[in-house]
Image (cartoon, rainbow, N blue to C red; front, side):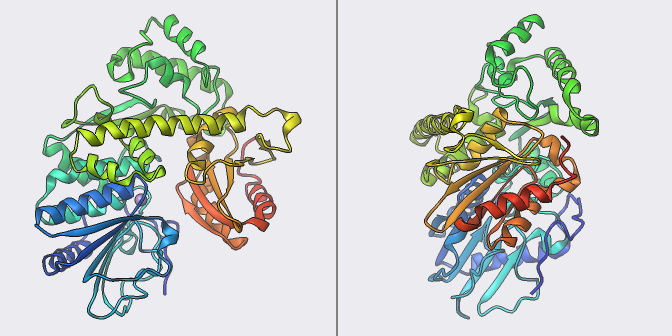
Length: 483
Ligand SMILES: [Mn+2]
């Protein structure tokens, strides 16, 4: 058994599928063509939802009846395999999913997470795993679950599914390092462009809510570095007024010149406060490519990949998988209405949770609030549901010290704590600060498990190891965090 991950392999930034992967896709196509009793298991986040939708759409078009189930990673330990063919997407590589399968059954895994098994793995069943890491391709930046499923769709000639591959990559933050989609994602982007489904606005201002937020709201949400405008809508309005820019329209309606002025202003403010080691990265922090879906209503949030992916994550975190699935497969009526309800409810839940943490004063510190150590800051998310503690942690970051990662803790059951980490992108540009790798290392050292992205990751740890985890994490970052 070989364990490889993107750290040990210097992932190749190639834009075309390597021959070794193409062969596997041919085998996957044959397996699907030759089976009629099919079940899909996919992950519950935006990438997993996109993966499931692509696979289900492929099977629909082939006239294959199938079942789909959305699962969390911890639900796969003793999974019973009942179907002729079981497909796992955006998960499976790191779980013993083939444990209960027999020689008459087939399994296909399409996953971009660190694999437990290598390419020559001998399984009890007909076993086919497609994972970019087996082929030297980094799964964090170059292709994700939805992208891998899209390449299967492409094998059947369904290039029109490429836009979902793009959406999955944005949802999976595959562009977080450079602000652009790279590697195999490039092929998916090009397929979508070629099919008239996608337009890219290069080096757009990196503010959230391009379609639906008034500009002053988007600006006040800038929290990668804490600026006077961060969480201060009045101040954001004032700055826009001084620049003679209409703050009531969304970013997508702002002209190129106006964006330039906002860039200059943000740049100036950031330069005044960032430690010198981060200065070269500031432009990258303010700019990223925007991805616009051309088959959506131009005024609607679904036309912006980033906003679309947020609504998919809202569905995932609220167990509204069916709704997300229907929207992804083209339903723009009932499903879209429920999507709006879900997003609103999700925002309300987030606001409630944030208030609970952020509004605490120092006198109440025993009960909560943000606790700052030398290299990290953390809070106890008493009562914050484990499925939203990550999102809450990201939002709380704007209330704390942006120079340190923020860790949110939430007890999931009697024995375990879910840990979520979010940090400014500036921190992650330092290669020594890949928090997805660090959180895996520290959680494993206390008997837990975790992983994820450089800027957003999580872990599960035993309840009684809470303090040890916090202390180890704090120590591990000595010399890495600039104070
Ligand atoms: Mn994924």
